[in-house]
Every structure is written in structure tokens, then in C-alpha cells.
Length: 501
Length: 129
Image (cartoon, rainbow over all chains, first blue to last red; front, side):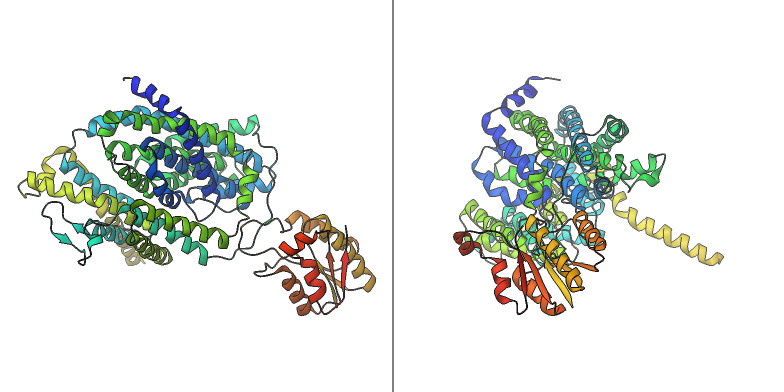
């Protein structure tokens, strides 16, 4: 393996601008991690216009920092206030808050920070080794392979992610439909433009992401939950004892591996991996009843796993150009705004961007480890800001931001329309993630599908004649029919039982 | 009849609680502590932590006074909330802690103590720490 581009990447990271934006990214990430309701996807969507004026490397370094920084921040409220700041910190509540009630809040936060750091770093090293291999493998991919990959990606994100499976698939289909708006690239026919000139070039990604994630989430949080305020918690005795460290070292190791593997899979990501790591620890423990009552492994495992997953979910994006989850879809959009098309060529053609972003994560994780403990009090103070003050400011920033991208009022209208749609989707239990992801992959899917049909002379069986696309499509079919088969088997088993009775 | 204490976890609040407890003993009445944070935010420095409430309960038990702690959040104005609860329970006296606030501070931020003194139509006992 040639080490020169890797070392050049460090040169990129240590440029003062990039250092500054890395710091900004992780601080903002921790902030939104602390704030319940505002997730990394929403924040990155809102900040998309800010990245417009800066270098691509710098922009992605900052956005990546927000994503993995949020994994650190979510822990703080989970442990101290029994209130997960992020979906990926939900399982940390069980043992983290139990430890806090025993007066060991500092230990829980310290273990979580150390675990997050180790998980993140292990994941970066594994990514540095694996990503170039995947990319060189993917260089041989043609349109049929991309068709299969995009289909599989959309299906996995819709089915694997939490929430209602059918609703996620409906959302993904709406996303695919939205991707077809505009002039067709092959025949120049206008589709679904309603004779509106602004729609002729298709829907832009930025207003859709800002509306669905940004505005939609703000509106949803505003109406919600008048929960009683809590007294600000105090943290003492931060350093975990040697016994705690020894006890959680196994959990941290396993959490790193689980997080890394699940992070690569589409639809996996931080949320799923934290749940899986917690479940594994509980199953492995000699005395599972300790879990939920302040077991230190119950904090270490999910926190390690969610950081490892946050890091490794960059692999499919940067090597294949397929975002693995909603946040990655927004970063994909950010890359497109910058004129960088993520894909297998990225590692070889833009090594500075690729290695700059990857290596910035080492630095970001160190910054987070240093900051996370001393600044806990400060971050908890943020929670004293009332949403009635925060929400109008965020909405204003969103609307001004989207206007500055194209200086087009039509984009503001789009944000409001998609904001209303995002609000209604959340209210009715639809996750906007699959929609945005399908929208991003929609044009890739359509392009490569039609190109491959041209290659195959319109013969769709050609997909199965090529080994990689055939395998991927077989996986697609299996994932698609598996739930149905399982339901069928269950029903059959039940009816057999009834007959016996 | 009851004695109502407007409580916040500060020296002023503690002084008000001590005076309220003494008042409840003197009148042989029940004690109600109102600790009302502003609603909306997740965390508020005005909320008394469970340990603080335990301490208040212990103090009241030592003086053999029956104590109720209410922590209902207010949406609009703290003074309104105190007066509303006082009317609702028709308390015999409201006990509040007061602190020094400059004329400019009062102009900009207002004074909850002053509002309670003016708005309540029952006796108010104002205590300094």
C-alpha cells in the first residue's frame, strides 16, 4: 500500500483552516447531540448553504465532525437527564442514568468518552485499510452493478432501519418519484414540471433536505411534549477507576467491531449498532440482571459502537457513492454541491479530499475526548434555552440559508412545502430518511438502469448474467421476500398449533 | 388554612422556606412549597433537585409540619403563578424571599417579588436572606 497519499492527507488536515473547521464541526456536533430533537441529519441539512463558500475538503471535514461529534453529545443527556439527545444513545439511558443515580455520572461519561474515542479510532484505521480496497474493486463496476447496488441500498435502508417497514418503502417510492421531476437526461422530455420553468431542471437536493430534515423536525419539536423541567445535574469524579476500565475493555473491543461492521451496511449506522452492541453485552454477561442497574459495560458497548459506526458509514459513501443512511445522504448532497461526485474514483482522483476527511477524524476524536468531559456543564446549560426561542432562530437561518444557494425565492417555497411534508410524515410515523436517500439515489438508479438496458439491448435478464450485479440482485430478492416468508412460516406454525389444540 | 412559600434553590429561597416553616408552626397550619420553573426548557436552574426537596421535607418533619411540594411549571409569569396558587388554596399568608435588584435591573427584568406584593390580595411576608 502506498503511504504517500495518506501522509499528504495529514498535511491537508493540519492546515489552519481545516483545523478550525474540524473544531467547529465537532463543537456543533456535540451541541446538537445534546439538544434532543435536533439530530445530525437536520443540522447538516441546515448548514449545507454554509459549506457553499468553502473548499470541498474543509466542508466535508466540518460536516463529518458534526456527525461523529453528535454521537459524543448524545451520551451526556442520556446519562445525566435520562433523556437521549440522539437516537443512537437511547440504550445508554438504561445503565448510564442508573450509574448517575448511584453518583457515578462522571464514571459513566468518562467510560463513554474513552469508548467512543477507541471505537472511532479503530474504525478510522480499519477504514483506511479497507476503503482503498473497496474502491479499487468498485472501479470495475459498470451501470448494471450500480443499478443493483442502488436498488439494494434503497431497499436495505427502508427495511433495516427502525420504524414501520411498509411506511419506509412508501417514503422511498415517493423519493424515487420526486427524483424523476425535471427534464429527462436521455430524451429531453419534461416530466412532472407542471409547465413551471423552475422545475425544468428538476428538484434541487438542498431545499428538500433542508425542508424534510430541518424545518420538518423544528416544527415537530415545537408542538411536542411539555415535559417537566429538571434541575441541572452536577458531575464529579470523572475518571473511571481501573476496575471500571478493566470491566469495560471487552465491551469496548466488541463494540468497536460490531459498530464498524454494522456501520458499513446500508440502513445500519449508529442507531442499530448501539442496540446490537448492548444486546450482545447483555447476552454475554455472566449476570445479565446487572444490566439496567448501572452496569458499566451497558454504557461502554453502545457508545463505542455508535462512534465506530458513525465513522465506518463513510466507507460506502466515499468508495461506492452509495450513502448508507440519512445523514450520509445529506453529506452526499454536500459533496454534489461542491462539484465532487463521490464514487470509486474519489480515492485515486481526489486523494487529498479522501484522506483529508478520513485523517481529520483522528483529530476530531482527540478533540472530542479532550472537550467532552470538562465541557459537560456548559453543554447541559444549553438545555436551558427554551425551544420557543431556539426554533424561530433556526427557521430563519434555514430560510436565509436556502435562499443564498441559488438566490431563488422558489427554493424558499420548496423548503416550506417540504417542511410541511416532513412535519406531516413525522406526525404520521413515516421516517423522512428513506425518502431523502431514495431521492439522492434516484437519478443514479435511473441513469444506470437505462444505460445498462441500452448495453443489454433491452434484455433485462442481462443483469443476472454478470456475476456482481447478479449476486447483488439475488441479495435484493432475498431481502425483499424474507419478511413475507417469515410471516408465512409464523402463520403456518401458529395454525399448526391451533390444529393440535 | 395553609402557608404558601415561593421557593427557588437559592439563599433567598432557603430564607423564605425557613420563615415560612416558622410561620406555619406559629399559626399551626399546613405548609405548601411552590417551586415553579418556567415551562418549555429541558433543564432549569429554578427547579429544586430531589435532594433539596428531601432536605425540605426533613426540616418540615422535624418541626412536625405537614408539607406539600408543588412543582407545576408556569407558562407566562412566575408572580401570576404564585398568586394563582395562593387563591386556589386560599392560603393565609404568602412567604417569599427578596433580594436587592438595582433600579435599572428592575426596569429591564422586572421584579417578581414586587408583582406578588402588589397583586396578592392577602398578606405577604417578604424575607431577606
